[in-house]
Image 1 (cartoon, helix red, strand yellow):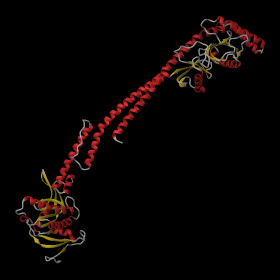
Image 2 (cartoon, rainbow, N blue to C red):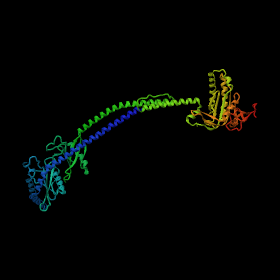
Image 3 (cartoon, rainbow, N blue to C red):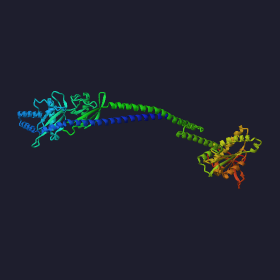
Image 4 (cartoon, rainbow, N blue to C red):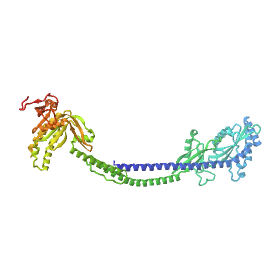
Length: 622
């Protein structure tokens, strides 16, 4: 995969990730904002319900409390309790009838439509309890709150539980109850429970319960009270697994009630919210307890907020973000393409340039585009290749003017300036009769002849791991053992000398120049290193052995090799030599023993045959 493609993919992934993250964050923040908004409205709804309930029932609670303080009522309750304890049904029935009649007379403004206070609701049920907390069945003539048998039984059980609660034994308490009327659907009522206390000793004689219709209306979405305001959200009261609401449809009310039943099973949470789908609409449902400190059965206020507007706004926001993301993606693709082009083209040119350098083309140059880092990299690359080309030219020139081995040592820095002591074998090879041979010859032809002569002889030196120290006129100076010894440098030098004679004979057979040479070879200690002026150095060897090799070369006959005593000893049994009369050489105070190297034993190994073979001047063994 190309760099350009990778860059484009990275940009696409980053933009898609950013767009997705933005959508996610926007969704979360919008949902939280709507939740907080709905929570605030729900708090307002709760406060409004509590205020309305307090406004509606406070006067009733005061009225029933005053009624409970009536001496006549207390006397009738004592009579009822006494008759029940005496198991006198006749007296009990008569006392209960008088008790309910007294209640009807004193509470007619909440029981009798003809005496009702304008704008105030009428009670839908009325119950009196004895001192044991058991509901007293109303006489047949009482029409207010006539319940079905099952409803009567359930209401009696609930009122007994309230009667036994400490909070209901001294003062009126408010709460919600579900009552099943005899000739009407079950409905939700707001009840006022008022204890009746004996003024003499303060003991509880019984209680009075009056139920008023709750604004939540009837269950399953029907109501006989006024419709709520159009701007008010659907709400109701959940009690005993049923949602009582005048503004929530039957199916939706069943779904909400079922979900609340699951959430509150086993005590559950007191308040909270959840999402619920009712038909095509998604609702956020909030619920919280009402009558928190009341002994009445636990009820919860429920309010539904449609998320249609929120969904619409979120969808609109999602489309806007997606559109902006798509536009940004298109712009990013174009910009990334331009950027990738601006990056990849210089990089590709650098890759091509490095490939050319790898193939040895140091003249390659890459274009410099712009002024950024890649442009500076291109400048550095061009400077590098120019430097490499210059160094290569220096190396080529150095290889031409110095031995390759010496050049490599000089470049690597392994050659010591000033020299070091080494045992070397030094070879001098000189053309015999050079002056006479070149007399009258044009200089260009002399040069051509010398080049033809030096080329094969130099190759022979390299073949035997020697170093061509210098060319002096028609003379070749070669060194064996410096700068790197081989361990058998004297033998290599001798083999090189014999090889140079063979190469010259072969060249004489094909060249128009018939040249004969003489070779001198000496072995011993010498100083090897870079020598010369401070600004012009030359790698060479100096010492007495070098001078000896030069003198032996001048003593050698045509196509002969003359070696010194040390070389003869180093060759051992590998060489066939002919001793010469000790030579009186310039620069040496004593005659120098020398030997003519006749041949080398090709089957022998270095140092393996003892002393070399000696022959007489007539060619016979000595």
